[in-house]
Length: 252
Ligand code: ADP
Ligand code: MG
Ligand code: MG
Image 1 (cartoon, protein in one colour):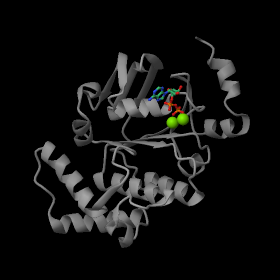
Image 2: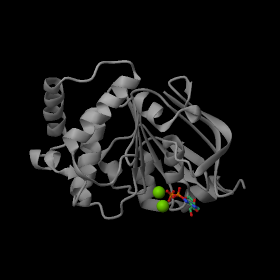
Image 3: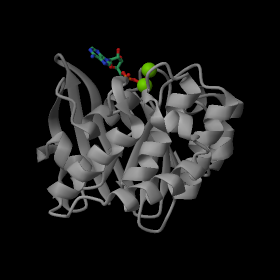
């Protein structure tokens, strides 16, 4: 699904990613953890295609295609979902209108017919139930006046509706309560299938009490310094990052 090979990326001439390697197969859930400033959000931004970043070395292949050559829209149409890629607030546009447009844009790019009103409604009801999202939120303007938890719910709802092959969720919000964490986790677990994959970026070890990742990676100073199973999250909870940095993090 996704192969990242020796990825180096810079922001304003400062090298942030310094040789990231990662392989994600269909059916897998990966967690990327690491101390603040490690480059986690930068990695997500490179996958999203944000312009501020310059890739100086390395390759990213998504379903066999060169991701770094694709426009943001082409990435979405190919089945990549970035949790934060959609506008924060869109006054006057309901979630339903917004998502129907997004879905049809992706279908068009794939050479498919637009979704019918009936099929869209059915899909929306089905997916709203998964994320426990009421009609009230779906009919309100996108994210306008939403609480942190509601935005989170909304993000997972968008993911459910767009049914991506690969979802990358950067859980950067500091104010997330247990309820919002649970929504993210439940959504990820319920939407998991043999055909899709998820990368959850988090500094909340708590989130991994709810999501069961197949792999946990630790990013430190722009490199993945260690990879293990979900037990690593528990170990990090107990010991912090220092023991890993001492063991693996000193190869400047
Ligand atoms: P994390 O998500 O792991 O906390 P980030 O990817 O946000 O880390 O940041 C990694 C490093 O890149 C930090 O040192 C940060 O200061 C720097 N950085 C991130 N974005 C920018 C930017 N737009 N301009 C300059 N430096 C940035
Ligand atoms: Mg940060
Ligand atoms: Mg971050």
